[in-house]
Image 1: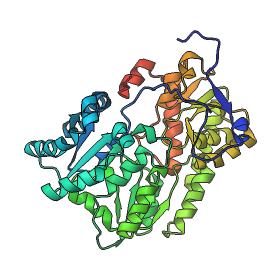
Image 2: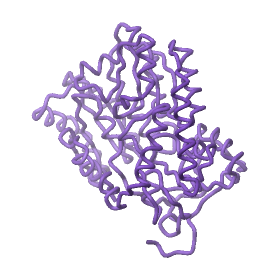
Image 3: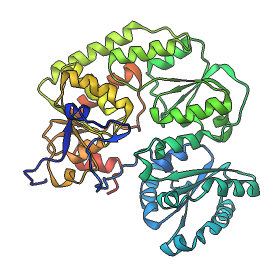
Image 4: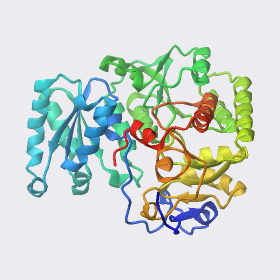
Length: 435
């Protein structure tokens, strides 16, 4: 436990909205140039997300340190046998001779397996130097006659509109080949595991005559993956997938509709109304009423509890905080490093309820030297890691919920952890934390 009387740096919602410069994306804490390199959980980073593409392998061309996390997390998450590494030294970077070795490395891979797709992945150093990875990939593809996809794992771009997780999802769907459109098929993109079977969206789609609902996590073979090119609509449930949906619209003529993964019964209902303008779904008011009743009961039961919301949650942390505040659930702070334009609409509503809500940055060095305001329940792995003496609730993308059933699942998970807390160490080890 940290012994320090100095609180970690934070900004209130009110002070943030009063800033002169609000060009998005923007850092929550200004002048945060020195970053604390926080712990990494298995999660869905660039490597694991890329390898959702079935029958694919990845060659990571990177310094030794960049492969460490992938090796550790890969063994735990089951994709280590599909990862290959070409390590580069400082001397390699100066001379550039490693670029000539990529072709040889790919041929070595083909001696051990027969993938349908090969990912070439480079890191920050090549991004900074401007290495033309797409040209390298195209040249190798023309030679070996196997699809080669270029991808960067460059966390230095996290604060840009072309963040690594945006680009990797574009690359995942870039291998789709145009097919005849099936008017009874849709894709759900943005989720990395299968949508929970009790999600009412699946029921609504089936009732609307949709026979085939494709999700990347369900594709076991490359041919199954290619069926996604025949969908009549992409339902985008994660804003980081919008760029991929735009690419599919331009390349495959598949339109898309955004269905935000929100938790407020009112905002969920609005998502269904928007979707209803594209597909003739019929909303069932019973689902909304049940979810509202559930959060009312939760609010009353835990009215004396205080909550912190982490950035590593399945959803927008400000939207979750707003949902709680709207239902009289006490939220003391939110973790958020980069604030987006989407965040602002939630911040403006939070301002009307709790303008002094604190925003911490999980990468600011002060989170290690100072203390975080005491709470009873931490939602999100990062919030749990950085808080002390509280109940920890992991709510990440290892479980894909959505809609009214998603709110009920979240409340149920929090309730389970409050009633039967997991030891902090067990929670961290269970999520393959790599420090």
